[in-house]
Length: 572
Image (tube, rainbow, N blue to C red; front, top):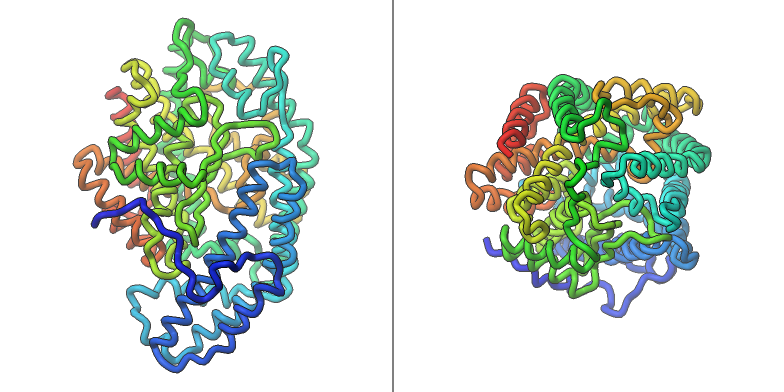
């Protein structure tokens, strides 16, 4: 199948082309009309679904732009108010209508005749939404939408001074690549001390979020928020027990490889002990990798890299650039992190990140680029809901792109030795991320199984889990206070609870895709694009199967994949 990046905004047939979302009064009539419309035939049902899909796309895109603008500038109060207005005044009014429309769909006699193959996952999700809906949760969910954004506001203000200049924490982290060990330690301590200054604000915010989330779960008839969230996230294809199995497999099959990585790093740097500020450093005489200079340089080099993989991939980035759908460089007042935000009506997504000229920024760019290509590939699907794919496949899209693109990083590194180091860095990161994923996931299970815990209990549990997955390779003596709040740098805990193990499951999928790519690049890319073009119209095991993968995170399978990556690393 030929794919085109010449993406077109969906033509409106239900709402006026001039309609913009300003308040609930202007929006409600469209919901009312859908609710009251008679559905007397299968054709009527198809049209009703298309009109509802159009309405969802318009609303979703409006909400996305409010969030994008706010994260690009956390200092602009008007942008924050616009986002909060949507959360508090528009979204709560939509939810009761969404529930009634879901019920109308499931109760419609013509729904039975819909193509089972095409509509199975959509109708399964509709039923799940009906089961979870509680009127009393609407105001709590609205409050949560606003509260979650406080994390970005607190973190966005964090800066440190290095050599008389002010840097965001993202910008300052480039000094951790310096040859000067004293400078590295100084900057590491400054970053951690700056985080400590806001530790109580972060603790208070998290405690409030936990209490509200727990209440939502109780209202919906669940014992705890973890059980509620598994259903809400549509985790139909795996259980909490499999997550625990994943945690154990990481200890067994990943930590030994990490020990080897850090032993090699210590020897390379000629150190007696490896400290946390040493892990990104290079030996004296070896310059830190400088893959690009400005945000525009990062964009241009990414296009060149993607062009080598597939001209279609490069065209996707060009289209986004033409629409000004990039904000790449780190600056004060910008929210931390990076994301690709799908825009369901116009189709071409938006990439936001905090680039500071480091190797990790290249990884972020190609990662978010993989997400962007997923958005392009699924835009043709006729209903907005078909484009809502599970995160476990969404992250395969992005993480596979990190590994596929490595063979074409010449655009970033003209020196073969630098290219080799960059690939080493990427493969090390592919492995070393696993324990952190297990730590964050295991921590969340405990947090929500014990929602009334104290800050002291939370801290003790965090440290215990951290120890469980730590290697002996890094000396953390004297850093206890910093380690106690390590979780506070993970935005997912605050903004998207329980969304984290997906990275682990998907990293396994991405390694599987890369194994295919190593054997037959052309077939691997066909499998990749075919699977992503299905959006969310298939179950997770079916989507993995379309990509030529097994949906499996058993210890045996993890062992096989780790052995493959280990061989590739040694081959460099």
